[in-house]
Length: 161
Image (cartoon, rainbow, N blue to C red; front, side, top):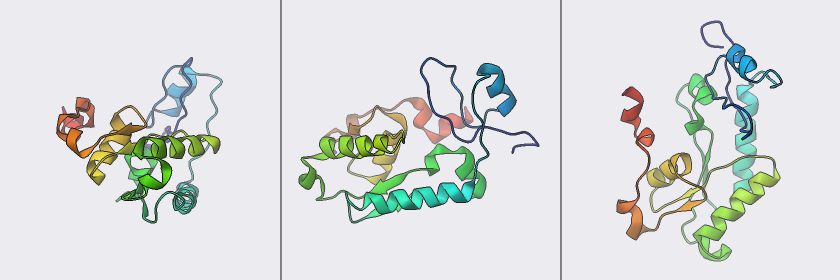
């Protein structure tokens, strides 16, 4: 709830329907898509699901971490805090390379009915940005990191513009 109104916390994308975004007032969502289903968001259930996915992720890397929100409200509306971080250093060779590993992670998540975005880069920050703002799966090698461009909206300062 935001200011006494129900708001969208998560949404799935259907290309033939108008875009529904997190933070949108539920009444506006229903006006755009009258047949849309609206379920209460359960923050503890979301955390448990992320924990289960992190355990599943150990099949790809011995180091898996959940993105964590600083405040409870951040987890509800900010999709930046609903992800997993894998340190795949040395593991990519076991799967045929970074691109193949990224595609496999994405395919297995799709098998669970989970839409995902994958970013693989030499640093955690670059991988985080790629997974949120670039095409996926998206792999950037160390030699390409300086020449990779992302849309302005990926810049935290752009939110205040």
